Length: 231
Image 1: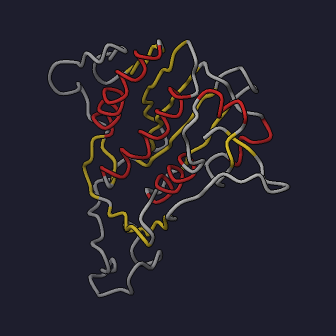
Image 2 (image 1 turned 180 degrees about the vertical axis):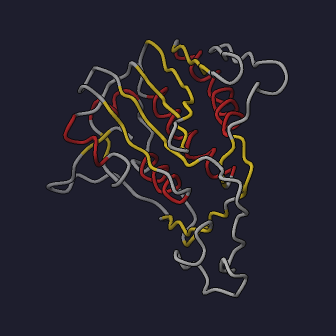
């Protein structure tokens, strides 16, 4: 249930991605433990957080800075990792962060859950779907829009999200790729790079401010041709 209208994502410099992921894993630790699923955050920049929710003491050894709307990016990552926990009946969910050589960073979530059909992988973050029957057996509650909205938020951070799976029953891996903070100042809302006023919400002149449209509610449907996914 999302408020009808537009929610503007305003990016800020110097947001630590490691702490966001650490918070999300901690928030989901009890849920995973209650299900008997082992949730790990394999943090190469600090310490390992186990499914018990025990956190590393002090700050991470290294912060990975991105330009982000912290709360909205956290919501997107929460949706993705929660999805992995939700659709993993048993086994484990492993989350890690990988710094790339191309000035980007990857958040990788790998689960041993119900998997995804290969023909559906390219669409899972780009369209809203009715959940599959297998997904409904695992989790009776779900709107079918979680991963789609997460993908839209990631796009608004100039990133991309995608998934890999060898098929149903073979687990899934979810990737979120984001550009690292380049140290350049963030362009304020409605101000062009030259300091002049710019038209509101134009992509060309406000690269760090992006509108995201949300729908009030989306109910699962069984219309002919409507594809089904776990979300």
